[in-house]
Image 1 (cartoon, rainbow, N blue to C red):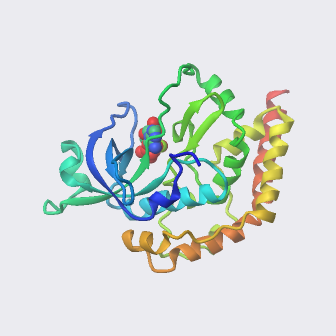
Image 2: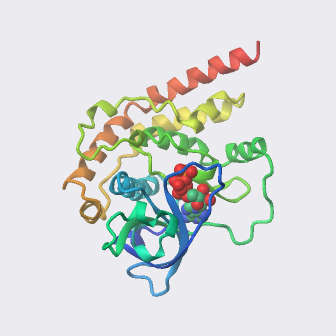
Length: 287
Ligand SMILES: Nc1ncnc2c1ncn2[C@@H]1O[C@H](COP(=O)(O)OP(=O)(O)OP(=O)(O)O)[C@@H](O)[C@H]1O
Ligand SMILES: [Mg+2]
């Protein structure tokens, strides 16, 4: 198995040993803080290079949970994703500019974040200069249709090019699943109303539906059918620990998995919606 994708290492919680801020473009208006550095994981003798994300307090526990559970479910759906796990970070590592915001209690010495092992390719020679070329490269990734279906299943409304790590031509890792279930705070909510709700902002499904490439559109619909028949999600081993760490009511993961397995059966209809939007788009642009 790819050494970056190792669910056995994500069983517990990591601990950040050293972190540096990862600076965003000034135009990025994002409330999360991202760091990169060395993280100690239980069971591994060496610290590992990882990206660590700290969420604002109001979203923190829901989004850490979302990221970690989605990583385990991505693996169950055969999508490559770097090992993602909850990670304790000393507040002293936080940027002075955001420390008071991220850790409002000055006596708290640690905050909970989420870490994912660094998937940056070490020897990539080609970079892609235009957004059109980047999308064309992505559309030729063998897993792109599967990810479009997975994003619909998980109701992830935040897929974009920067939420994938490009490892080489047509080769990607899936990251950043904080906004599953439409980015809602759902721990204490009835999940039934989400079962059939369309993920309108499924960018991959829309892009695939809008292409003139029949093959990839058909592949997406076949994968949706395939999920219905064969991909039964199960509660990952980390569920109890994760629920405790994130303050989720006991049984949250079982409830989520039950809802997702029901949602799975609606995937052909949900994907059909994107296909129809794509048909309309193509009809209007070819007029
Ligand atoms: N495991 C990883 N390997 C390599 N790079 C990573 C990894 N995790 C994050 N990054 C880099 O850090 C960036 C920000 O991470 P991430 O997308 O998780 O944060 P975010 O705040 O949710 O971003 P946004 O909301 O803008 O999508 C990514 O676009 C990517 O460049
Ligand atoms: Mg992101």
